[in-house]
Amino acid sequence: MDQAFILLSLAGIAVLDVAISISIQRTVSNAEKTYHLQKKLNEHMSDLKEMSKRNASQQELAAKQSEMMKVSMENTKHQMRSMPVLLVVSVAFYFFILPSIFPAGHGTLNLFVTTITYGTFQDSIYFIVFTLVISLTVQFLLRRRDERVYGKKYRELKEAESGNSVVK
Image 1 (tube, one colour):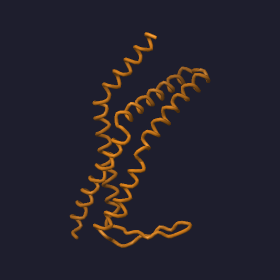
Image 2 (cartoon, helix red, strand yellow):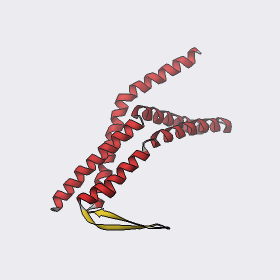
Image 3 (cartoon, helix red, strand yellow):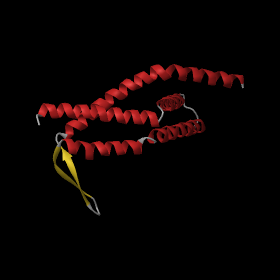
């Protein structure tokens, strides 16, 4: 096959891989909840930094770190929900689909108990680079979109929470 055609095909397949992966991730992990958890974590980190600057007591710092760790663990667990599905998709693309379209031989992986032989594909480094660049670009654009879409809701929610805490 022509090298330019192979590269264009790999780029197209990388776009498809990224689209499938990101749509799975955002659906399973619920993009809005992920946004809210990340914002909450950033606020806790900002508060902790401010408390350190004003020399807060060790008890106050420990309490804030504890709050931050709870939110961090919740955020991590929430985002990891999609990982098993994404692993299957990635393995399917890298070890089954692409080697069947662009065969280039076989590779081996030596493990302690066995050796695994798998099909390789032409220009695999290009596929990895294409996927990485496309993924980072799409994630950046989605982060900006999320700020626009969920940011207003988040600020309204925070205002409502602070209003409720004042009333209590």
